[in-house]
Image (tube, rainbow, N blue to C red; front, side, top):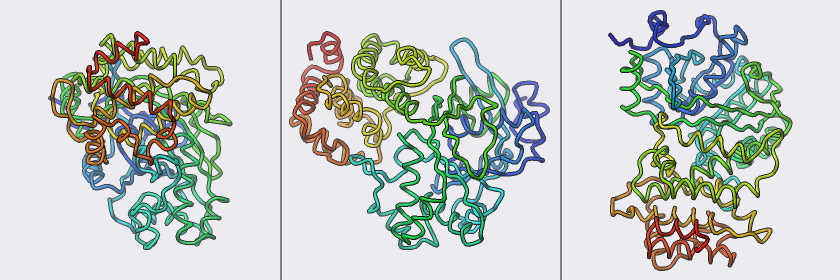
Length: 492
């Protein structure tokens, strides 16, 4: 009989999967985490579970928090299984499962009193967040905090009843300041260059609208360490639940499937203290920026490179895209010719070998990552993962043929129809706007580049405009396959 995940059933689950080797009842909370999604539970929660299994730092357990309506469902499911999560690591030749226990509570969504008091609790010394690349209220073109966003304007008008994660963090910091408590450290775990700086700008930027003195205190007194995080973690669906029950005899309402590989690089800037994560493989370095650039440009940029041609060719899984000879060759050429040459050196790292590792990870047939997930939210991801590499190349007079083709493929994808005529469902918060512009761009590529908030100065660069227009015209006249062939033959 399959076993449902719960604290009482951990002894029986131990015969099927790894379980915590520590007394969960003795854990106390030290971290509040906003955004309890799959990535967090496959990454930060796993590192803490590893640390607790060593018998260390049991005062650093996690308390979940959220601000979105779909966080309600996540909380309900995790609460029903005592905040335990089954993590399934899958490689081509092996698979393993473990139940992690590093989370001990999940604050009620929308309960302002509960959230603010948790943030003001002196035992909470770190507030971390994974709210996706699009959750930081960044103007895509300038990459600066957007103080005019309606959510931010609303929080500035009612700071005592915030709706955003940054408003809640600011409220918690203000309560601690009023009570004479040291501020907690704010730690972003999202894939954004300089994520600590970006988070500081969001919290302090909101504070600036409320009270400039409070903003100055945030900038001077609160730590926002930068960090680089990495682990491929697809969305959970019925497929994953069925695999877990069939292969391991475990029933989990929201398991997490991921690859075996994981990486976390952090600046050691935690004035209020931190868990000894270096004991379980986290790298603490003086400057995270080289690692961030490497990961965001090569891995995330690589994801964007294969996503849209695969979507246009009706490919479902990422590993299937890597099995397609044209898409794999396209990735290889764009990475080695255009992306890697403008990635700054990284300590003790060979960028060519790093890309080879990335290609192997993308090719993992067991992970079940989908092309639809990689195509999601291009309006936030392109300005972070692809366009900076193009800008760096243009600044030194280098070709951007491949990078412009990546963005042209994105434009073609947002038309909402694959090469075969299959409808592409909405896959971006700005889908209506993107689809309207993609239809205009079919005959006038410059219509796509009119999005100044995304393309910024690139839209006025003649070399970029020519490369993009040529690529998009070719995609419409000859199709994806022919366009990839032309690029690989240096004939685009």
